[in-house]
Image (cartoon, rainbow, N blue to C red; front, top):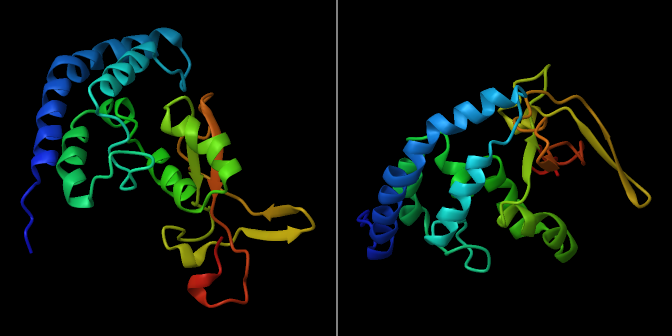
Amino acid sequence: MDFSFSPRSQELVAKLDEFMQSHVYPAEKLYREQARAAGRPHFHPPVMEDLKAEARSRGLWNLFLPEERFGPGLTNLEYAPIAEITGRSFLAPEALNCAAPDTGNMEILAEFGSPAQQKEWLQPLLDGEIRSCFAMTEPDVASSDATNIATRIAHEGDEYVINGRKWFTSGAASERCKIMILMGVSNPDADTYRRQR
């Protein structure tokens, strides 16, 4: 199997390297200063919006999405060196709109969301206007294994009723978090790997 990087990937890596040197690394100190000055643990420092605008103008936006309707359509192999580079700074993933848990949540909405859900939640996430969280972890089970999830989801009329307890849901306290994707058991009698929704 050929694991060499495509010319497209190499071009993006070069652009990203330059962006990291010229904008991201120098912004780390200012980001910390703005966060500290705000005195709020979930404050969104304004410098991040500057980085996002710059990344977008350079074509370094939503690079993680393999589907061309929503991003550049990179393969996993093409995206791998980009992810490696963004991992060198705590600012880079969000600056490129490639930060977890938004990435996974956008993939879920792109693949399974209705047109209305995509309009209300996916588009603002793709535009970097809002953040999201993913509620999986539970206090009483080893919930890194999804087959242990205890939260129940019941369909009642036109609504879903959720009973359970989640914790350690990264990003949930952020003022910018506008959507939560929750993992729960909707069919407890199904095969082990078909119980979650």
